[in-house]
Every structure is written in C-alpha cells, then in structure tokens.
Image 1 (tube, one colour):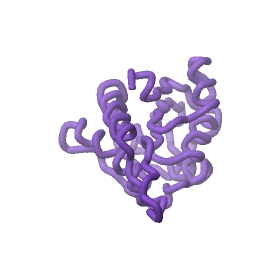
Image 2: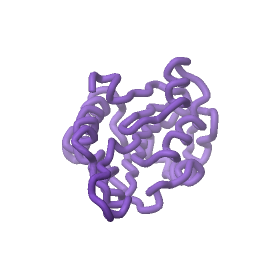
Image 3: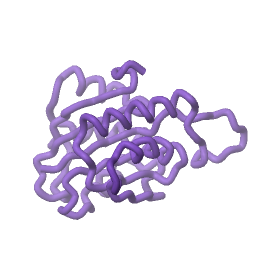
Length: 173
C-alpha cells in the first residue's frame, strides 16, 4: 500500500513586472493558505517519508510552513527542477521511480500536471470529492490518495482511492 499526497502550490503573486515565472513568490492569501494546509497535513495526514518539491519559489514557500509542523527531523526533501511545470506523465514517472522504502510521498507541484495526475490516479472515493477534484484543482488544494501498489512502479491510472480532497476554503480560509 502506498500513500500519495498531491499538493498544488498556494496562490502566487503577479505584481512584479519582469519577474521570471519560476521566481514568483506567494501573495498574502497564498501565505495564509500555505499555513492552513500545513496545519491540516500535519494534523490529519500520514507523515511523508519523502517530500518531492518543484524548485519554483512558490512551491518552496508552500512547503516552508509545513516543515515547521513536523517534529525534528523533518522528512527528507528533494527539490527537483524537473518538477517545475511538469506534465502528468512526468510526475507519475517520478513517483514510479521512488524506492520501496518510501511508503508515503508528498509531491508539491503545479497545475496542470498536479491536477491531471490526481484525476488520473483516482479510481474510487467519495463521489462528491472525486468530482470536485476533476472539476478544478485550485491553488493550495491537497489530494490524499491510497494506492494498492506494493511497489511504486506498480502505481497506475485509476488504481487509487481518494481519501480526501481538501481546499483551503474547506478549512475556513
């Protein structure tokens, strides 16, 4: 059994002309949503054995409050440039390449890839949440998936059960 936590970065700022997309920080709403989701993950989700995170500023700033929630030491973190704006197929391939010693993985990335990956992996779960996930994967949204795969390479489309789909607004944001 493998657990996959898919987290889209929180809302980013667009106010600095000429700033490269990779360097955009979170806006104030995004900073708040990142803290709210960090608390939810720490309180309600299995602790990740590994965190995979895009190198973009907005994904790293989404990760930062979560790291404060974990009792030391924090889980291992892999900041990976290839996750920046990666498509669904690349994200799935990265998960499939994980070692079997990882039981729970947290992947922090970007849409469209992160939302498409979540929708592709889901094969069952609460109908309303599955539909909400497929309709829109908003900023700072989290999908918690349980896959019957014993080994990461066995993770495949339609195989996972959606345990939760949580948006900041669901938590009173």
